[in-house]
Image 1: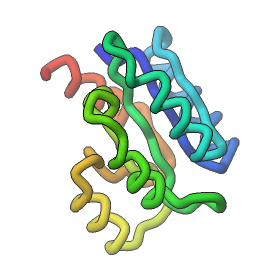
Image 2: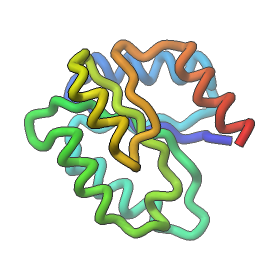
Image 3: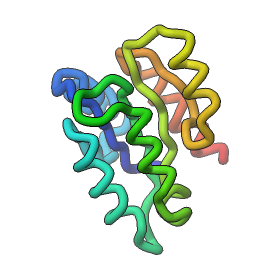
Image 4: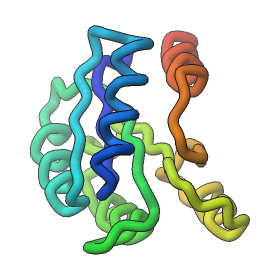
Length: 133
């Protein structure tokens, strides 16, 4: 069962909302929040390269000032397979642009595209999918 969530978004209010919703649905989960995508990449590479690393869900924003969600995914793609197999990435964005949704759908590392704000229903759905897997 997934007990770890990672939120990468330069908006601290969105991160707080995500944390509250995740914890409301699943109080035992660990939620890591990152305002800086570069810091998140370092954390992911070091934490999830371990043999016994837990699985995690990563909510990734698209529009961030230092590197975009798309650039984050390019860096993530270069990670070792061992790291990538532990993470399920969901784009979490306020963008309603069809091109963003299509780009996410065509990225092999992205499970789904979710429009902000995150909801309890989405968290419940993700947790149910993981239990069924």
